[in-house]
Image: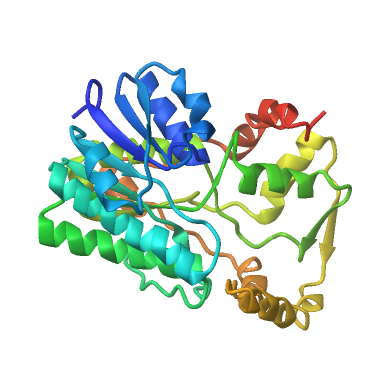
Length: 330
C-alpha cells in the first residue's frame, strides 16, 4: 500500500524528526496536516507543497478530534523530552491518550507511535531485543515513554485502533540539536574529551533511516500492533561516532578521562537533578556509556525486510552544511 495521495497527520511537526518526516511525505506526494503547538515555529513547512500547517496541542482532546478528521494515517511524533515527571506525563502519556482516542473517533487506518529505546532503561548490559522487559526506573522521560506505549496498546485493543510502535535510538542529522550540534561542539575540542577510551557502544541512527522505517510501519501488514527497535546494528563505538565529527573539525585527537573520576561525583550530580524534579540516573549512565551492547534490528529485518542503510561517516558528513549554517563549522 502507498501513502501517495492520502491525507496524514504528523504531530510534533515543528520538531527535528516531525519536520523532516512531514517534508519527506510531502515530497512523496502525501497530503500532510502538520500539527504545531506554535505555528510560527513551522514557517519552514508552510511554504512546502502538500503541507497544511494546523495549530493544535495533543493535550487538547477536542482539538485532536477536529484535526484528525479525514486522515488515514497518524504519525505521533510529539513528545516532551525534558521536565518534571508531572509535565512529561501530561504531554507524553495524557497527550498520547488523546491522540489514540481521536484516532478511534476518526477511524484512521493506523497510528505510528514514536517511542524510544529509553523505555528499556540503562541497566541491561547485553544485546536488547523488542521482547525485553521495560525497566525505565526513575528517569521521567523513560517512565513516560514506557507508559505511553501502554496507552497505545490499551486503547488500540479496546477501540480497535491499528498501531505500530517505533523505538528509535539517538537520532542525528541536519537540524538535530542533541546528537549533531551538541556532539559536534564536544568533538571539535582538540583533543576531544570523553569518559573512558570510547570503546563502549553508542547508538546513533540517521534521521532518514528513522523516517524510512516509519513509512514502512504505516503500510506494511506485518507491522500491525508490533513494536520495532530503530538503531544501528551492529552498534559503533563512542569513539567512532565522535571522531566522525572531529574529522569535520579537522583533527582526530582524543582525551580519555578515567571513568573512576566520575564515580564519586555522579551521586552529587544526581542529587541536584533529583531536587530539580528530573532524576537522570547519572551513576548508572557512567557505566552505560562503557557497555558494549546493541539494540538488535533482527525483527525489522525478518518481518519487514528493512535495516538502517546510512553509513555512519556519510551521515555525519551530510551534517556539514547545516553545521556551517549554524556557525559551528568553518
